[in-house]
Image 1 (cartoon, rainbow, N blue to C red):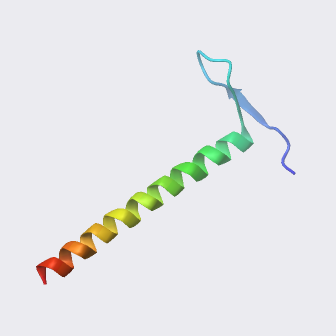
Image 2: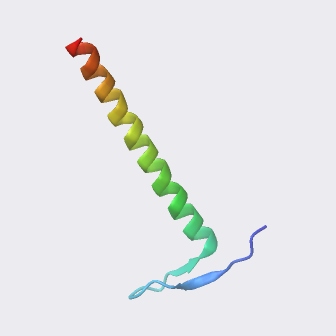
Length: 52
């Protein structure tokens, strides 16, 4: 299990950024980007089918 590695406090808040939270934020961002990319690709494919 990963230890809690404290990277620092978020300025102006009481939030403490740990390594585990950083991994969750990065994974969530990548997942959001991937879903957005898939949706845009599907729209492009539908437009290509209509134009053909």
